[in-house]
Image (tube, rainbow, N blue to C red; front, side, top):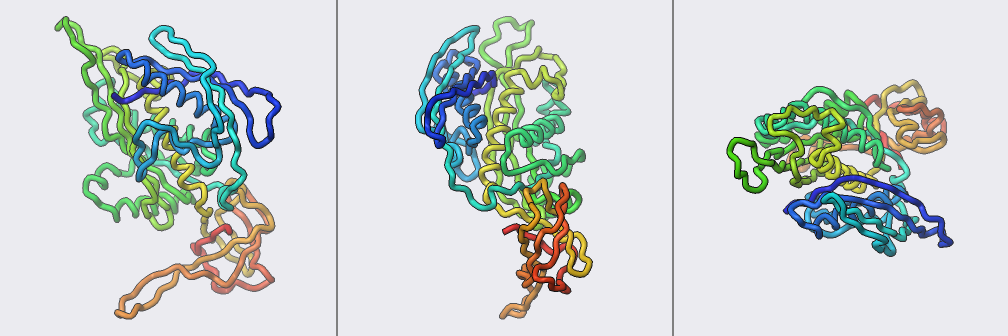
Length: 389
């Protein structure tokens, strides 16, 4: 049986006399008890509470379940290196109105070791999510779930990510479902490059709801009334590197929970009533897992941008304060080159430029740099790639 989540949080920081490397946090999580499975509900409530403590303390959850090749599976916790739980204990537990509420006290140690790129942020553009089977939206009239879910995902990314920031949220659909069905990798790479160029994003994110079908829950003994329903949720997230169009990673999350609404009710997926329901909370919980997982995956990737203007020894790049760039920092340049291999085949490559750029002035999304050592970068061209190192 798939497990379900529901956020219901009260977070209290305890002021205890502990070393600065570790502090105690107390948090409360809750979850509905489905099919009388108290053990599964308790597990979800504990997961919820621990996630809150790590999020509040500045630690991050790589995922609440084991990550294997980008697919969230398994039944145990896996925490990132930046938030280590030294000790955790259940303070109290209570069951009321078919819900379990668990309060956890955890001793969290912050890891001081970071990769150099972790202090920078990378820009992301998000395109509308898509439905693999549009007919499944008929139950509940969830025709706008694609746009509503991508909007909610963007909000969660802004709230929970330490590595990424939202560069742009695209309103038009890109047809990822059709590209995926046709196994058209070139088309997917092409759309990612196009979105990246339009928005100056380093990464492009897209997702497909593989399953939002409903199932009858239990036995319906009265044929004149509709049966209670459960609803499935399966979502696959795709992350592309914008300049190359390469697929960096993908992850799949899934679950099942009760469908709280009347059988023939038309539900507004932009409304808070939907997101406060068991199904809305399931989607949010799984999307938050994706945010944490992607954040962890990309945290040590170097921030990359492009040259957007050249005037003598002054070079403007599309990296700025939003990315964590400061005056005085050095940037390195790669430019597109080519060569003929031993077989006489023409090949393209990135060539490291001998010039180094020093940041002179920083704006929100761009920076004015000067070629170091007062050289004139005669070979620096617009669209050359810039890397912070």
